[in-house]
Image: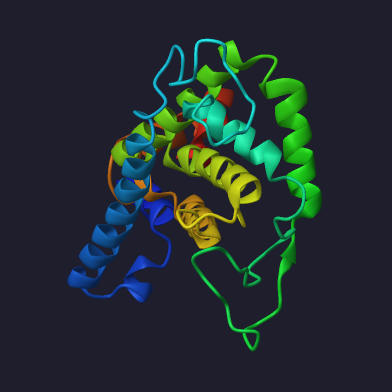
Amino acid sequence: MEEKRSVESEERPGEDVMYPARWERWLRTLVIALASIGMGYLFFTNLWWKPPPDFACSESFDFQFSDDNTTSGLCYWIATEVFYANPPVPDTILEPIVTNSQTVPASGPVAGVPIGWGKEANAAFIENFVQPNFEWFGYVIWGMEAFIFLSLVLGFLSRLGALVSVAQSSHLMIGLAGIPSPSEWQWNYILMLLLSLLLFGLAPGRYFGLDRLLRPRLMALRDRGSRFGRLLLPFT
């Protein structure tokens, strides 16, 4: 009985102080579950426009950026990241930009976060590693997003799933932010990253899903000296 109480107290430290009413605890769990499932579903919907084995690319896996539809699918967006790694795209985020569909008043905020070095490093990584190995690396990209979907929707290894989401959202933010297109808005990717960071800190599976069942067992393994339990526990 004492061991059970200690596990519960470790699972929910200070819960009675922070959420004294039952309805508040239910509300907290509901909001976290909706955010986690929603983020997972976002990645789920993005699995189907680039399905393996060709990832909706042309037969030659053409990575030349153009507007004549010779490049398509995942190859098109990889080529887009490389093409826009250099000016005229601004090398900052959070700073107002002017596109063909949006004019930001000159009196708006001018503070920004420089990411030019990140865009150039990302382009170099894509050109020198991703593109030459795309036939198998495409599966890595698709598999990462499939894992994020399963992890955040099922609440299974949810902190690990959120960490992978942080990595993928950071990549999209650096690679695609600031593209002068009416269909692209840099805050899409910034908000994805912020929500991923929030879920990483919360570990949503502790509030719903399979991690609620998995954590007590991993704690027991850890307490018996198991490296497996000690390794996996922080990712739940």
